[in-house]
Length: 154
Image (tube, rainbow, N blue to C red; front, side, top):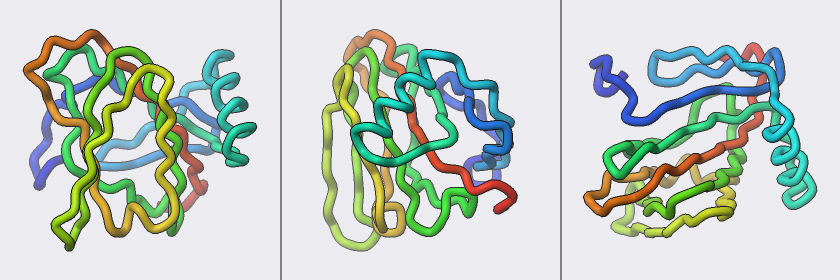
């Protein structure tokens, strides 16, 4: 749902996680698919690097430059007060943008294959982020956003 209107997501999405890691946003509820070995392995590697134990992952496939993600903050109650999100990019390099909610500050980050972006602390309270469309020809990109869902917190 965008501004009260149902729209088709401009990317392909699937949700994996522990059985109780049900996630709702924008009028959509994702019940987790069972972990597959490669995602469990990546989750374990992120735990070893960041000492954060996530219980779910949102997988987004951006097929080309017209697939995108609009401006938003990940602030659902199920993510807790100051959520930590580990965002792993696989495939084509794409521009990731951050914009402060009140100040006239923005940050552009080119995320390439294998880049891990951590968003944590109060970032979601003060900043919004997006992955804009591009006219530049790009090959597919998978983005894995690992999250800790607090069960029964809707």
